[in-house]
Image 1 (cartoon, rainbow, N blue to C red):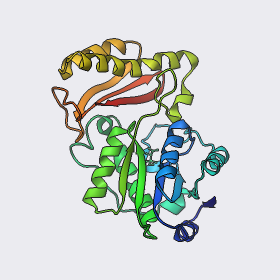
Image 2: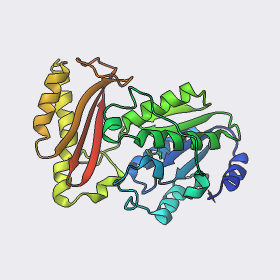
Image 3: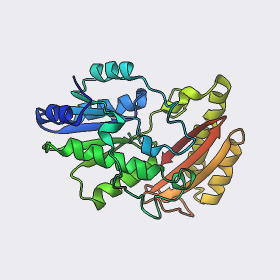
Image 4: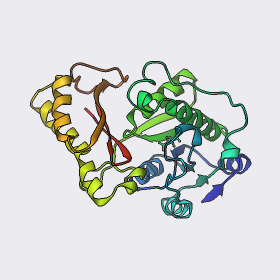
Length: 278
Ligand code: PAF
């Protein structure tokens, strides 16, 4: 595995890669969720590139940028063992200059749900993903696939739109949410949870299970599903529960094969999100 910290080193390393390239962008503190993306990229491509960069522009004032878990050595070892060919770990100065051109998330699907709760987050996220995709596309791999988790559903939809709107030559591959055996969706932020908070955090996945039961009983009304989910979420501070279609438009009724049920809640000081694609 080659580890590149500068753009020159990255481009030198990717210029030697043959065939298709699978790319997994991350902010580090790698867990089984990231590993499932890396394994899939490994299975489906000739070469794999992973980036680790805690992107400052997607953190809002007062969020956990400084405290965000950083485990560079352990992450590098994990990547090496997982068969990654190139690991890109740039500094902030490598990725950003002064007075940069900005990307703004789209007015409707970028400014609901996570977009309202974390205004500006998606602009910074899209900006860094655009930079990273352009860098990996630079040496023109024969086929370029980038892997993103469905857990960050709105992020995934916005990245897919950006790729389409800006004609970026990459296939976005959506990957299923990975859960612990107790149902908690894996997240780098789970380490902030105390033992007691972790138990309460399980209500997010339980609320989605409740939604599944209702849909299986042919209860398709969004308001009824939301009401029932909120009963399960009584011990956490709910930020939103919503039903949207794959275009991220709020819907009144479940459309089978085209619905995402989303939940965001605070457990203590930790903000968690989870969702279900049905
Ligand atoms: O999902 C993440 O970890 C980040 O938002 C991403 C896509 C790596 C961009 O910083």
